[in-house]
Structures are given as structure tokens and as C-alpha cells.
Length: 104
Image (cartoon, rainbow, N blue to C red; front, side, top):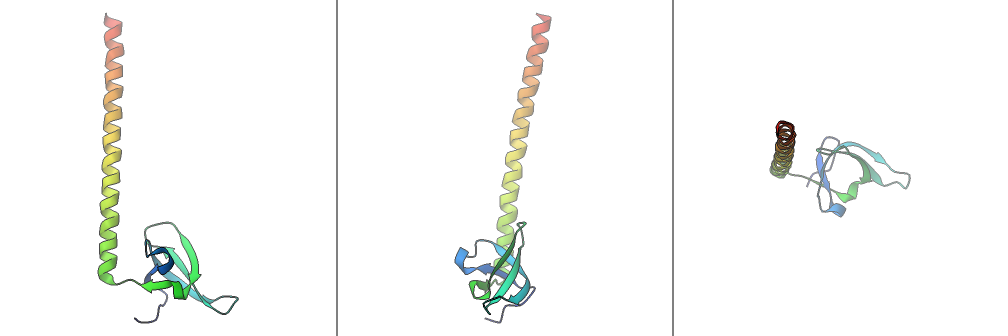
């Protein structure tokens, strides 16, 4: 695989590539090892790690990753909407119950 450079999308071997990052910069650490500054592509996260802990991610894998992120987000939004609708229905029922109590 080609050398990792700034702009590449990578995963961390030590974390089983669970998150994807964009390489923002590559610098030499105090011990002489190459270090990468990474920015999460879908999380607000900045990470510094050894270059040898990184693996380049293929374009097809990036597409699948984004599909998974979007699917997960859609499910979360649906849950939020369902909860809000349930709470709203409960609020209406309570309000109607109070109105009926006043008329009795």
C-alpha cells in the first residue's frame, strides 16, 4: 500500500479501525518516530498517534462507513421523533383530563 500522507483517510490498527480519520499533518516526534495528527471524519476528535499504527482506508470502505453512519443517525432521529410524539400525546391527554375535571 502507498505511503500515508496528509489528506488520506485512515483507521487505527490498535483500535481495529473502528473510526475513520483524515490525516491533517505528519511530524517527527521527540523520539524520532513519525507521528500523525488525525481529525475524526464524523466525530469531533483530534488524535496524535504513531504513523505505523495507521492503515489507509479504501474508497469503497469509506462509502460503506458513511452509509453505516447515516443509517445509524436515521435510526436515532426516528427514536427521538417517536419519543417526542409519545410525550406530546401524554401532554395532550393530561391537558384534556384537566379540562374534563373542571367541567365535571
